[in-house]
Image 1 (cartoon, rainbow, N blue to C red):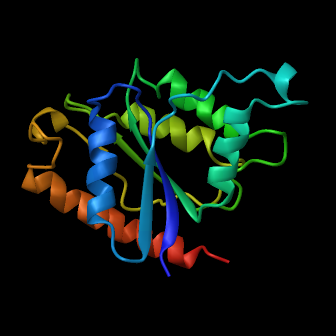
Image 2 (cartoon, rainbow, N blue to C red; image 1 turned 180 degrees about the vertical axis):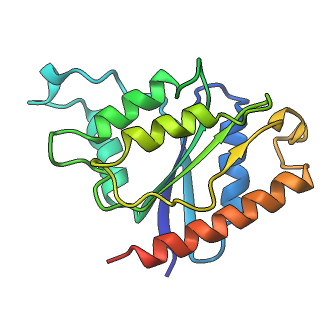
Length: 183
């Protein structure tokens, strides 16, 4: 049986590096994982006034997370943090209070940047946001992908061998993390 993993690429851009990385991970995943790659597109803004009658898009997103066996975040870094659309998705998922759709779900975090720092600030912000509303975070290996601008071919396929090696090591460690935390 394969564990179902919701893989959230935290950017809305059609050619985003986060989406390309998430799709590459889906291809590299061992047979024990089935990654469903999504983006925060279509998740309306969180507004506590709507909690009594949540929008259909909130309910569908929460349901997808609740039915999963784990969640993998692949995020770019915007202004030393995560994109607002990703934070909004997390806010929607975490409600209603005490009933987060992420509770108990093993979580992984991958940040990326075409620059030299690999989105480390974005990853650290996720590490601050998620405890208390999610399940256990994969602590090691940490992964901050830098220089991703030249890692993909025109068709979006992963062409940089050094990145493929790192992603393979990470997704294998994440598979072990998910298996260990099912239960």
